[in-house]
Image 1 (cartoon, rainbow over the protein chains, first blue to last red):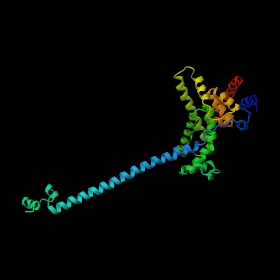
Image 2: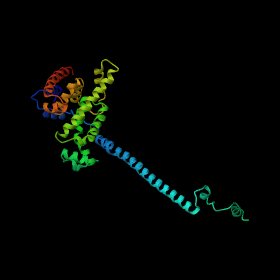
Image 3: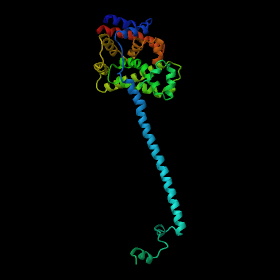
Image 4: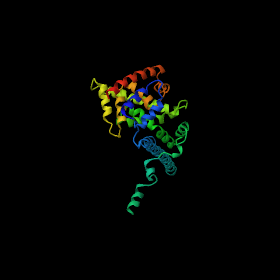
Length: 117
Length: 186
């Protein structure tokens, strides 16, 4: 098909009685076609699913870290409470000396203990 | 990456599968309709560097709006509407951008669009059609694209462009006149 025939076809394609499907088929046969690059669909799928997956994995990691932190924090607080109770039961008070285990000791006995005399 | 087993699956099934998290099903939708989208975008914007980005935007927008697709219209029509809207928005954006620098905004915009066409081998017929389309007013260009390149009937064109049938018919007639004047000079 030469250029003047294509021009006529293009103009006649807009007639009300033209068959648009047939015109588009002929034009495509004449090399008037459009396409994206070969990797087009892969690029879209990567953007939609794999970039999204990385974000999702990061979000899951942060979620697991928060969960682990709460577990450790709760366990730690429970351990401190148990320690305080046991100190109170053993020493009879929660003073600083009780914490150091010195509430029942005398200064002389500590000196003897440290010097060996 | 795209599962061949979906190649004969109906569009509505592909949509359901995609909504169920089957990535390959959506890949098949992209594969099936990318040429149609390319035809709309590249014939409207020229073979510019932005055409592929807009093509990607079309399918990404489609993916996030799949749950709104009821299956009452054809999937191709639904995709075409997205492509047309994004393309017309891009034309408006470019027009605004170019009008900031020159009063001859339209002419420069078309020159810009035609300039970047070396990414594909193009024959004479293709060059002719592209030059003619780029010289047209966008509101007529979209009608010509739908009719001449996509092969849509007047009724389908009206549905995709959300225009009354009478408006499409009158624009078809005016587009034909404009196209005739342009082609004489080419």
